[in-house]
Length: 188
Image (cartoon, rainbow, N blue to C red; front, side, top):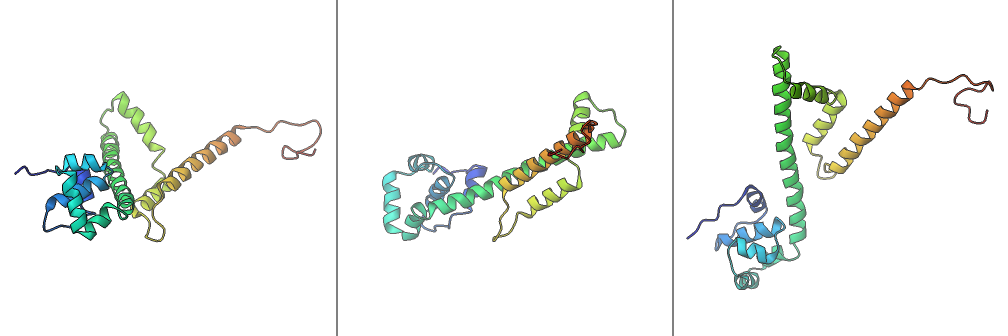
């Protein structure tokens, strides 16, 4: 019998599926469904016939519920966990790269041109505000108020706009006006 070795994605999806003592293929099939594969594709990947899936649904109300009305909620929960895990893993890799370049610079080792450019870019991200956002991100929120990636993105964008506007405003030098009104006097 061929053993099915799930990918990382399917392995994570399987964590959302109850174990079925009578047939491990049920859990494998459901993990593909939760990972947003279509019914027929999930059958092909498991491998199991569509007729067998119908039999499972008829014989097991829990299985039928997961395949039917319970599926959208499981897909949503899976997507959230999966994206969080992938983002955290990738963020960890970015921090490792930052560390290698910062450490090399701290030792006085000569940096390549690309490393110098990278170092110049990352320096702007090492601020107290960035640390606070990362701490919020890693905290992940609560059940009542889950982490909102869109809100984080909008906050970062808003801060970038505010900083850009502050820099532009600082560069502007008010011109002397013959009318005697101040620069902020629109009715002058």
